Length: 170
Image 1 (tube, rainbow, N blue to C red):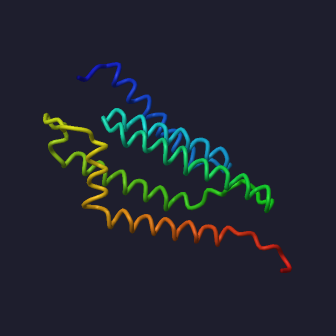
Image 2 (image 1 turned 180 degrees about the vertical axis):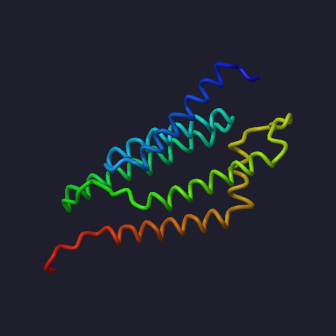
């Protein structure tokens, strides 16, 4: 099961994901940052495929690449042309960010080395995982599902309210 070709492909996608995520954080141009976020999202989807989570991988591509990233790109491009705002962002707070990164990586490494039993289970799930997700979402988790939809609607209304452009003098 540990084919060397799969290992090389996994590390290739992991490297693409990490380098594009670092480019998202450290670039000063918002457009370049958004386009490297595209590679980050696709890399994460590829890693989901390697984890045999095909449904989550497709959801990652459809929701994040097809929805969020396109919305982000249109928002940046339209805002720039309407309000004549520069597309440069300042990278500030390097020291606190580095300390936070070190703390998170330290916590993850501690969890990784102190947790036993990382091997996958030998038992396979029976039936379609999509059917099980749909059943659980619409039966046991219908209230949290609806609460999240209301929260997202409120966030969308708030974002539209904050993003409206008031002309000076009116």
